Image (cartoon, rainbow, N blue to C red; front, side, top):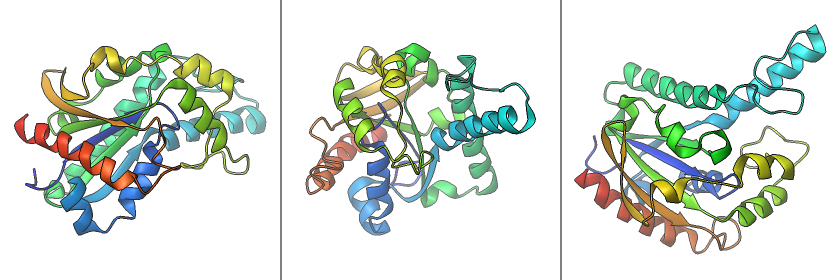
Length: 242
């Protein structure tokens, strides 16, 4: 562990809550300022959306080009099995394992940021956290981006670009899928306070909440640096005590 930066940062929250915009902001913040203000080093982003989208594309190709059954999703784009949600988490952890295997001094300079959303319909964060590896959990801190379902739905509609459905910043879900998959979120059941610790897999994992109902990630970006610094400062204090 570096004395200045998070080793592993879990960035979670509803779809379109502002997670991708936070990553974009951090990515474009100069490294020394990023380390000093936000305790984030050289950044590797492990996001489950590209993995999920690749499965959908492969299923479409199997069906249209080869006349074969879809492997992961049905024709409406829902996973055939709930286990696939958990497989995505296992896959992210495996990718992280490979990074630290190949770079033993990785965390002297770098932060691995793992991003995902989970609704109660497919197990919620409780189920997702159960699939995080000990290698991730022993180094992890959690930042939850908090917005209501109504705000998530609004921003999900707003960011939709039909020409780039695979884009990190411009992908979107239908209202029907948002309602079914993400209306309910179990975060507050797990973490009722604005900051604290979660017990996950035998590890004491610090967390903090970034409030974004007023959309400082897109609508009032002048407020983003200060609010993000405040959230990360609180999270860092707990991280150093874990």
